[in-house]
Length: 245
Image (cartoon, rainbow, N blue to C red; front, side):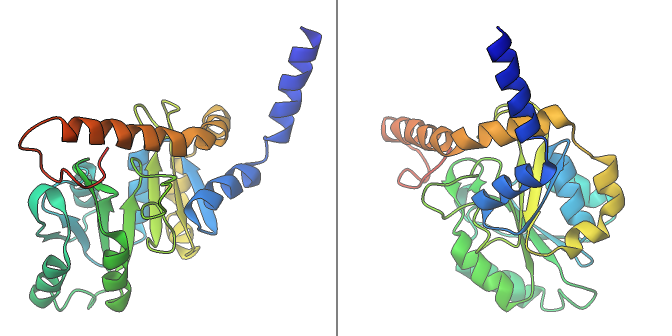
């Protein structure tokens, strides 16, 4: 019993440094900066608060909290049309820009989307990223369902400017509480400094994330495999050949 307690205390001391936890998270998203918050919606609000221009939201297949939080923050909301199930195609991106050519007149805007559109199929993140950077639009990916993607197509900081993740239940990183946000742009956190204090997470959640993130890749892989099995054994399924969760 003594040895067990001693090992537990050593573990607590070893991982009590927030910087170690944040560094581990960043290693999974390929970003340089991280903040841990008390929920996924808190992470969305921190990101959205730092955006000066309009908030672009898919017309289907996205988290309903995007629109609710944008309204709460009194942000201009623009809707981008999508294909069946919420997939954002190059055609829809070009159509949106043609219609909203003024988009960055009042500050850089941002597009908020989820890794998987309506859980049915992954978004073409590389294509969306190229479009976003070409047009000076911040790409924010809610990667709660795609974190630690073994194919590196989702939750990849090389594509997404900001990655937000909920770690409540049921999620790929499943700790029943909390969330985090990562980015290479430190100004995002400076602009939302007050919100980060309000939405501060607790040490138990932080340590749980530190531990559970190691299982995220396998959790995601098993979820995708299960979804694929269901898709292949039912009729009239949309995006049957695409990865979903």
